[in-house]
Amino acid sequence: MKAAVLGSPIAHSLSPVLHRAAYRALGLAGWSYQAIECDEAALPGLLAGCGDDWAGLSLTMPLKRAVLPLLDRTEPPVTDVGAANTVVFTGGRRHGHNTDVPGMVAALAEAGLAGDPGQVLIAGAGATACSALAAVRDLGGRRVTVAARDASRAGPLLAAASRLGVTVGLAGFDDAGTPAPDLLISTVPTGAADTYAKRLAGGSLRPGLVFDVVYHPWPTPLAAAAKQAGAAVVGGFALLLHQAAGQVALMTGKPAPVEAMRAAGLAALADRAVPG
Image 1: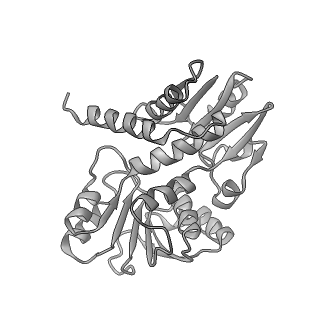
Image 2: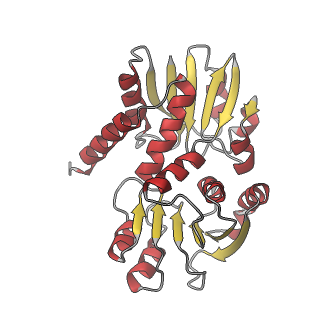
């Protein structure tokens, strides 16, 4: 059986390492998983070319929303969040799932957060921020401040918040007057969150827990500043691992071998960190 991760750019993806490690641990010798460069324009044709020998697809930027009209069925988290990161092929039909939400909940649980996170600040307003909203809701949170880089593009996030029953207050991305959070979730690329790293270093921002969805290079300036400030830190690798575990379970029908996947992923990241 075949599976793959789609996105653009995609060459950096660690997903093949995680999924292949899972297949080895599960004894699925006939399974393959690759990374395929694919943008929104190419997505319909690629999906059409997936036959009975395909188990499923993982989706990353910029495809999580673009895939929605191409699906035959969506699970409730996809509808709530407005994004799918997983397609499972069953009986010739395309079923959309979102494993980012339970992946975030699991990553936060590993850091000791299993209940109401208190005051939450989410940096960014894209598809990953929508999943973060759902994760906060699942943990018991009902009010979130979202710092949007472009408030005019926050419509899908506000619609997701309404479906989820979460009250969102929009703030400017560089607004130093945003409420002091107990939990800061950064859903923006490396470098974009540097303004929050500076506020952490300067002491004007003191969250107890910082979750940065970036996993490479690590640590990010935000993660380093958070650790220096005494905050607990959750990195993007934990999210990548747990959302991939959810995908493995959906595509194979078997429990994901999380520790085997974790070991393979950490080894690959260590290799990437070696100069040259």
